[in-house]
Image (tube, rainbow, N blue to C red; front, top):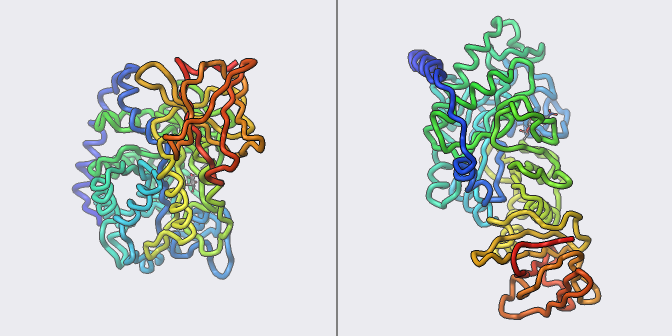
Length: 454
Ligand code: JFZ
């Protein structure tokens, strides 16, 4: 829904909001702001929009890859794409249920696409009619999610595409969009639109703004810095990903220079081999091969792979943002639900080995699996040994670990102590003959002092 006077006021406020640069943050302030994110380790990504209607197919042709890109993949002009509005009617949407699924899986935050590259908005924005208000459903999709998240103790976060194929003032034009000739692009006007929409979104109190689509030429480093400062001034506790600026190194996602804004790095569909030491990061990944819903993409990863990805990422000090792509009716696809429930069963027993943990002390990835750590209040260290390859001889050997071992047990059986021996600069734990969990069996090992690996 669009009210032009509000646009004018918001645009003016957007300009005035720019006057003061944000103050440099101390390390203690940064630690406080990033604290919940560092503890969370696991979140749910939701890609939801009009592209769920064609679901990866246009004029009889099936498209693969990320089908939230369908408008671009099939070169659909805005005028031909617009009627999808009439078919987006998520009457089966149950925000409480979505949040319950995420929470049970051990996810601590949800990042939902408020607007993807096609420009369509999931809330009834006062800045445009290209939104949920123009669909048969009409009702805001973000508010019920915000309420359910507040009720269930999950942080709601917003993905928001900077690139906008629908907005006439977005500066990079492509002929297929069909709106190339509507205006001489004015990126100042576009920025005012972006800020006015973000003002609306800040009212939902998001934990993170997850920008994307920053790579086109129209978006500049200066605009990235300006937007970051604008948001942090309005919402000092906010976390903003590095795609607000131009420093991201492609799919690897790390920042290529300290001048670039953004609180954390965003590797996409990949896990950095040795993590990204010294910076905060989050790998976003799909369960099949698409972000938005596809009716024909059945290349689902196994629950084992998803659980092991989560463990691998936590062992490298990062977060795992795992995607679901709901249908236009508002349902999370059954294969995704099944996998989330499988992860939930593992996390119910082993969540302590993920949440609030820090990276592995082993510089070389152990061949038996992965390790996460926790500093204990008494100065000792708890190691969580996530065993992927169960030792056939009943001896789990931790090469190079020179600490004194204090106690060990299966995480699932804290009462049953496992025998620890030390020899030749390695520590060995005597383990049961059979792995307790085929996905990953976690052994808890407390050692004296800080972990020392040679
Ligand atoms: C981006 C989006 O384009 C995609 O639809 C999805 O939302 C994902 C999480 O983020 O993916 C990208 C972004 C940039 C590149 C490739 C995929 N790139 O620069 O090659």
